[in-house]
Amino acid sequence: MEKRDTLRSEAKAFIHQYYQETEQSGFEHRWSEIEHQIQETGTYTHFYEELDYGGKLAWRNSNRCVGRLFWKTLKTLDKRSVSTASDFREALIQHIQTAETRTKIRSTITVFAPLNSNQGSEFRIKNYTLLMYAGYEKGSKIIGDPKNIAFTKHCESLGWKGDCSHFDLLPVVYSMNDGPEQWFEIPRNHVSEVDIHHPEYPWFATLGLKWYKLPIISFMSLNIGGIVYPAAPFNGWYMLDEIATRNFGDEQRYNMLPTIAEQLGLDLTSPFWKEKALTVLSEAVYFSFEAAHATIVDRHSAVEQFMKFMGQEGQAGRDVTGDWSWLIPPNASSTTAIFHTEMKDELKFPNFV
Ligand code: ARG
Image 1 (cartoon, protein in one colour):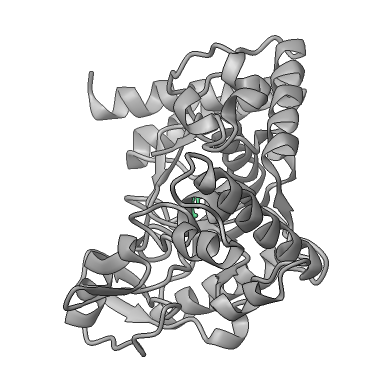
Image 2 (cartoon, helix red, strand yellow; image 1 turned 180 degrees about the vertical axis):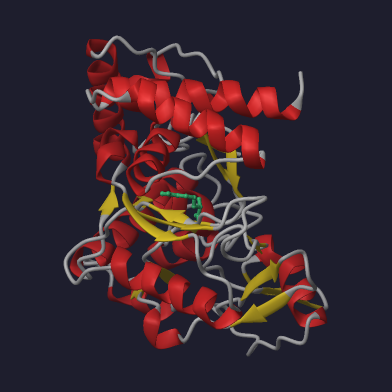
């Protein structure tokens, strides 16, 4: 099929879905307008409402996301006309400020110019997430987040330099109109982090752990009705296991379980020390986030919400697709209902790719 024909059919499917689900009349009129635009220019421009609904659908279709019950609450910041590096930086800071209110986290997406548009510059963000901690290899010792060692080296090759602490915030690396990579640092005073302590164990705070409040995925592009937005960072809030079980618990990440077990005086020859240490670590992360009024969801609540989402979708006559291996919590999985639920991992659009 011709590129234009593909775009036509993807656009039509989305616009049709948009009019149908939002129960509006006027599909025929809008469609002929878009068809005309595609014919004349090879592309078309979404109205704000379409962009906003398309982003919500992309979330609803995200097979790896357990938090999809809240898909309708996504807030869209339309930055399609941003064309300079300084406005790009401003927009990302505005994203953080919008997402983070004093009492809770708000799911937010910032959408920059699509491919082949004549308005705004084409930005691409190289970070996996906008906020990340650097990782350094110093001889046989590792400082910071081992997952980001390669990316940290890359940042250094671009001229960035960190403090070599366990929690250096990496810069945002991006390109503009396929130009050379550039970077900037998000000022630390714009980034809220939570110091991790445990309500029962005073020694926990001395481990010096902390984590940022916002998981903002930034490496994916958003595809709505055949239009590709290469820079469309979006955030929800953390599920407890992401930070506690994986980021702090994984051996190839911060690997905190042995230290915590030691502090707890656990018997390392028993086969249960990891589970015990993991529970204390989970409590610490959970209560610290709660105390800081940063939204976080524990694994059981997250799964209950997901099951509710499945029910809602079923009622609306839609099939929920999902990637089971990503949806089950990595800890105590079989105590949650998703473990016992079958689902198809099919890619539906709009989506993030
Ligand atoms: N797992 C990633 C991290 O620990 C974040 C992925 C997105 N998570 C989310 N709750 N939206 O940084």
